[in-house]
Picture 1 (cartoon, chains in turn green, brown):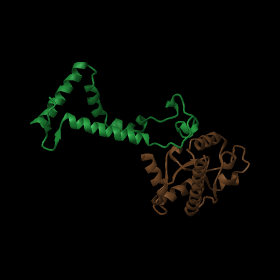
Picture 2 (cartoon, chains in turn blue, yellow):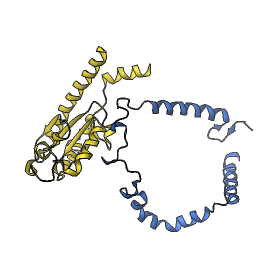
Picture 3 (cartoon, chains in turn blue, brown):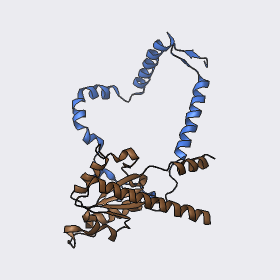
Picture 4 (cartoon, chains in turn brown, orange):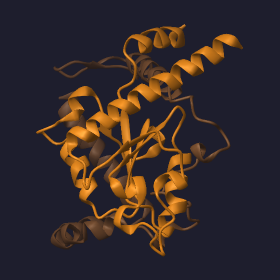
Length: 112
Length: 156
């Protein structure tokens, strides 16, 4: 179950994945810890920047949602999106079915 | 250990100057000159200075316009949101004195009525060379603030 899978391009195994994950996590946490420390906590320097306005409780009234910026794109792609949203039924058996099909499809490429 | 190394290398190569702008009621003339300053003819970005979208990453605040009543709180908030040490450069006559809008009924400016100003760049609008000179003076101001901070830390 935990053996090494050779794909022809490289290999994959659980140990390598865990080691990579640990290194990447360590690097990410270190980078996140390196933020600026010269701001003063508890002052406006700690507040969210909202174009100079006070941060609103509900930003919907004074912000433009991304959907407004892309309405033309959404309109043009509507037939495509209709198919996609039609596939997202929310029924558990459908989701498991897609999962099994995807795994089978990937297995054909990786294992054969 | 890592922090000490970072401090050491940042002394040799300090952070590039990052600048944010606030249009406090300008006609956009000065803002166009600021854009000219960062566009290819003058290209101040080759020295590391760049415009950033938030005051929380900025070292210098460039203010244009005479500060309308509506913009007073916003300008103050943007200034307060910048981390220390920071410098303020006023670009254009409006921000420096109010210019033709002086004593207008809806002005709270000029800028130094609201926030402390370090460098004034005059002109209507000032040429990009003048803006570059102003920002260079802001660098000197920032360096002196940094040295004061270091001296204070050494004393304590």
